[in-house]
Length: 83
Image 1 (cartoon, rainbow, N blue to C red):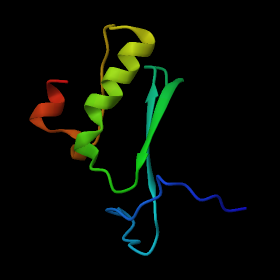
Image 2 (cartoon, rainbow, N blue to C red):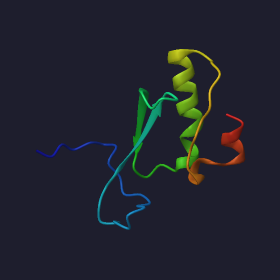
Image 3 (cartoon, rainbow, N blue to C red):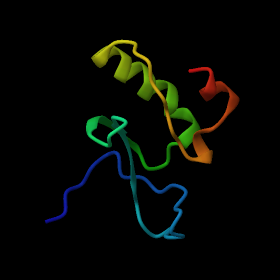
């Protein structure tokens, strides 16, 4: 069964599938790999614009704690490093 979602958008496809709509899912896990939460974004959203929103959301939910963030190079901008 297919469900329609307003988040499904055409965006940059790492699989070179410009014919497909996609969503972006940003999981947040513990050091041990256990899930803490996730955020879902439109498929046409730039990776660089998601970091600040994810950090703020996790801090609201769990407080500010000692943490290590790992991300791919698409999220590694100077502005995001300051988030």
